[in-house]
Image 1: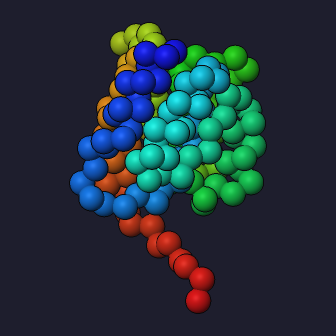
Image 2 (image 1 turned 30 degrees about the vertical axis):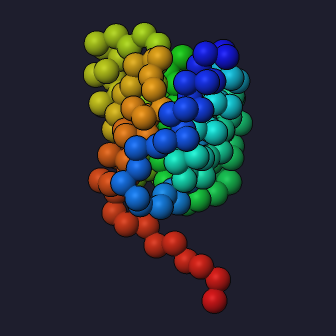
Image 3 (image 1 turned 180 degrees about the horizontal axis):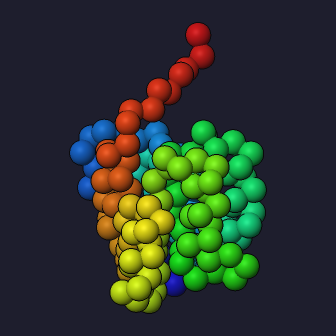
Length: 153
Protein backbone atom coordinates (compact mmCIF):
# COMPACT_ATOMS: atom_id res chain seq x y z
CA UNK A 1 0.00 0.00 0.00
CA UNK A 2 2.70 2.62 0.66
CA UNK A 3 3.89 2.57 -2.96
CA UNK A 4 0.35 2.91 -4.28
CA UNK A 5 -0.39 5.70 -1.80
CA UNK A 6 2.73 7.67 -2.75
CA UNK A 7 2.02 7.30 -6.46
CA UNK A 8 -1.63 8.17 -5.97
CA UNK A 9 -0.78 11.25 -3.91
CA UNK A 10 1.65 12.45 -6.56
CA UNK A 11 -0.96 11.87 -9.25
CA UNK A 12 -3.69 13.55 -7.20
CA UNK A 13 -1.52 16.59 -6.51
CA UNK A 14 -1.18 17.20 -10.23
CA UNK A 15 -4.54 16.21 -11.70
CA UNK A 16 -4.98 16.30 -15.43
CA UNK A 17 -7.84 18.75 -15.20
CA UNK A 18 -9.12 20.92 -17.99
CA UNK A 19 -9.62 23.77 -15.53
CA UNK A 20 -13.29 22.83 -15.17
CA UNK A 21 -14.65 22.68 -11.64
CA UNK A 22 -16.37 19.38 -11.04
CA UNK A 23 -19.39 19.11 -8.80
CA UNK A 24 -20.89 15.75 -9.70
CA UNK A 25 -21.79 13.28 -6.98
CA UNK A 26 -20.42 9.77 -7.52
CA UNK A 27 -21.64 6.59 -5.82
CA UNK A 28 -18.50 4.42 -5.50
CA UNK A 29 -18.92 0.74 -4.52
CA UNK A 30 -16.19 -1.86 -4.01
CA UNK A 31 -15.80 -4.54 -1.34
CA UNK A 32 -12.12 -3.67 -0.83
CA UNK A 33 -12.06 -1.04 1.93
CA UNK A 34 -8.61 0.30 1.03
CA UNK A 35 -9.64 0.77 -2.60
CA UNK A 36 -12.84 2.62 -1.61
CA UNK A 37 -10.83 4.89 0.68
CA UNK A 38 -8.13 5.63 -1.89
CA UNK A 39 -10.47 6.07 -4.87
CA UNK A 40 -12.81 8.29 -2.87
CA UNK A 41 -9.95 10.59 -1.88
CA UNK A 42 -8.51 10.72 -5.39
CA UNK A 43 -11.86 11.56 -6.98
CA UNK A 44 -12.56 14.17 -4.30
CA UNK A 45 -9.22 15.81 -5.11
CA UNK A 46 -10.45 16.08 -8.68
CA UNK A 47 -13.51 17.95 -7.45
CA UNK A 48 -16.10 15.18 -7.35
CA UNK A 49 -18.34 14.57 -4.35
CA UNK A 50 -18.05 10.86 -3.56
CA UNK A 51 -20.08 8.52 -1.38
CA UNK A 52 -18.00 5.36 -0.98
CA UNK A 53 -19.35 2.01 0.19
CA UNK A 54 -17.88 -1.44 0.79
CA UNK A 55 -21.36 -3.01 0.75
CA UNK A 56 -23.48 -3.01 -2.40
CA UNK A 57 -26.61 -3.54 -0.29
CA UNK A 58 -25.85 -0.46 1.84
CA UNK A 59 -24.97 1.58 -1.26
CA UNK A 60 -28.25 0.60 -2.91
CA UNK A 61 -30.19 1.61 0.20
CA UNK A 62 -28.47 5.02 0.18
CA UNK A 63 -29.13 5.43 -3.54
CA UNK A 64 -32.83 4.59 -3.16
CA UNK A 65 -33.22 7.17 -0.38
CA UNK A 66 -32.28 9.99 -2.77
CA UNK A 67 -31.62 8.75 -6.32
CA UNK A 68 -31.55 12.23 -7.86
CA UNK A 69 -28.62 13.17 -5.62
CA UNK A 70 -26.19 11.05 -7.68
CA UNK A 71 -24.73 11.76 -11.11
CA UNK A 72 -22.91 8.46 -11.77
CA UNK A 73 -22.15 5.08 -10.22
CA UNK A 74 -18.81 3.25 -10.14
CA UNK A 75 -19.12 -0.37 -9.05
CA UNK A 76 -16.89 -3.40 -8.81
CA UNK A 77 -18.15 -6.54 -10.55
CA UNK A 78 -17.35 -9.20 -7.94
CA UNK A 79 -18.64 -8.41 -4.47
CA UNK A 80 -20.18 -10.55 -1.74
CA UNK A 81 -23.94 -10.31 -1.34
CA UNK A 82 -24.63 -8.50 -4.60
CA UNK A 83 -22.58 -8.35 -7.78
CA UNK A 84 -21.97 -5.19 -9.74
CA UNK A 85 -24.37 -6.51 -12.38
CA UNK A 86 -27.12 -7.02 -9.78
CA UNK A 87 -26.44 -3.58 -8.29
CA UNK A 88 -26.68 -2.01 -11.75
CA UNK A 89 -30.01 -3.73 -12.42
CA UNK A 90 -31.43 -2.47 -9.12
CA UNK A 91 -30.12 1.06 -9.61
CA UNK A 92 -31.53 1.19 -13.14
CA UNK A 93 -34.93 0.04 -11.84
CA UNK A 94 -34.98 3.19 -9.73
CA UNK A 95 -33.26 5.51 -12.19
CA UNK A 96 -32.59 4.13 -15.70
CA UNK A 97 -30.76 7.25 -16.90
CA UNK A 98 -27.86 7.19 -14.43
CA UNK A 99 -24.53 6.24 -16.00
CA UNK A 100 -22.73 3.23 -14.50
CA UNK A 101 -19.03 2.45 -14.79
CA UNK A 102 -17.94 -1.13 -13.95
CA UNK A 103 -14.51 -2.11 -12.61
CA UNK A 104 -13.14 -5.63 -12.39
CA UNK A 105 -9.90 -7.47 -11.86
CA UNK A 106 -10.98 -10.14 -14.33
CA UNK A 107 -13.41 -9.17 -17.05
CA UNK A 108 -14.36 -11.99 -19.43
CA UNK A 109 -15.80 -11.45 -22.93
CA UNK A 110 -19.25 -12.56 -21.76
CA UNK A 111 -18.99 -10.12 -18.82
CA UNK A 112 -18.38 -7.31 -21.31
CA UNK A 113 -21.44 -8.37 -23.31
CA UNK A 114 -23.59 -8.54 -20.18
CA UNK A 115 -22.33 -5.11 -19.09
CA UNK A 116 -23.38 -3.66 -22.45
CA UNK A 117 -26.79 -5.35 -22.27
CA UNK A 118 -27.36 -3.80 -18.82
CA UNK A 119 -26.53 -0.33 -20.08
CA UNK A 120 -23.19 -0.05 -18.31
CA UNK A 121 -21.41 2.81 -20.08
CA UNK A 122 -17.76 1.95 -19.39
CA UNK A 123 -15.71 -0.95 -18.06
CA UNK A 124 -12.29 -0.56 -16.51
CA UNK A 125 -9.88 -3.41 -15.85
CA UNK A 126 -8.25 -3.36 -12.40
CA UNK A 127 -5.75 -2.31 -11.39
CA UNK A 128 -6.37 1.03 -13.01
CA UNK A 129 -5.02 4.50 -12.42
CA UNK A 130 -6.89 7.42 -10.94
CA UNK A 131 -6.43 9.24 -14.25
CA UNK A 132 -8.10 6.39 -16.16
CA UNK A 133 -11.05 6.32 -13.74
CA UNK A 134 -11.42 10.11 -13.79
CA UNK A 135 -11.19 10.14 -17.59
CA UNK A 136 -13.89 7.50 -17.91
CA UNK A 137 -16.12 9.41 -15.49
CA UNK A 138 -15.59 12.65 -17.41
CA UNK A 139 -16.52 10.86 -20.63
CA UNK A 140 -19.77 9.33 -19.38
CA UNK A 141 -20.80 12.49 -17.54
CA UNK A 142 -20.17 14.61 -20.65
CA UNK A 143 -22.64 12.38 -22.51
CA UNK A 144 -25.37 13.15 -19.94
CA UNK A 145 -27.82 16.03 -20.34
CA UNK A 146 -26.82 18.99 -18.19
CA UNK A 147 -28.12 18.74 -14.64
CA UNK A 148 -29.45 21.88 -13.03
CA UNK A 149 -27.66 22.63 -9.76
CA UNK A 150 -29.78 25.01 -7.73
CA UNK A 151 -28.11 27.15 -5.11
CA UNK A 152 -29.82 28.88 -2.22
CA UNK A 153 -31.38 32.27 -2.91
